[in-house]
Length: 208
Image (tube, rainbow, N blue to C red; front, side):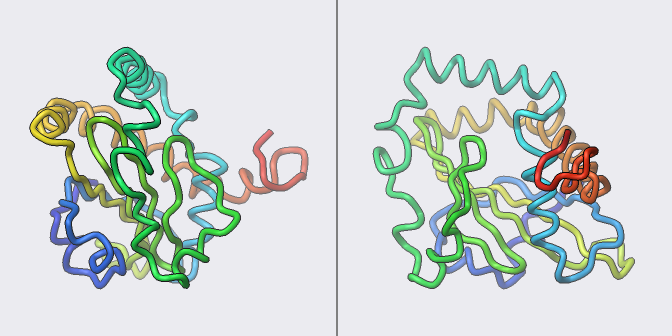
């Protein structure tokens, strides 16, 4: 469900003091029925095991495939356009105690981990069009059930005028295809978290 930007900016997230130069592009909520205040690590694990970008429905995978193809043709995704090239990684701004929170955390698709706290996680991506952060937060559900839910905020720094035009161009695809697909996938990962973690053959950490 789409939420107003203030649903992110009015909460006391650590990211506000670390990335004040990024703009909030989108805020989205994901229902996690029965989730408690300490279940954020459980949700993150479920997302890694059953909610990766390569597990999205066909329509969303097609859009990403087109995007990667264009990026390859136009040079948007070359190393010099990414983190440590065109832009400094956000991790360079972090105090040491936050850097240590992602030791051993693997890269998730094209996103690099920045920091991870009991109720807040940040991933980062940069290319020739934009420098973007995916902020994941764990908050009481908006429906007032007593449950907690996942919030995703997308923070961006477009690369000049072209980057702003690009973000405007892809907005309808985000709202019509990408975010609804993420909603179905991540909410499904929460519902199936125990099966995803144990696997159908009784092993842990990978769905069979």
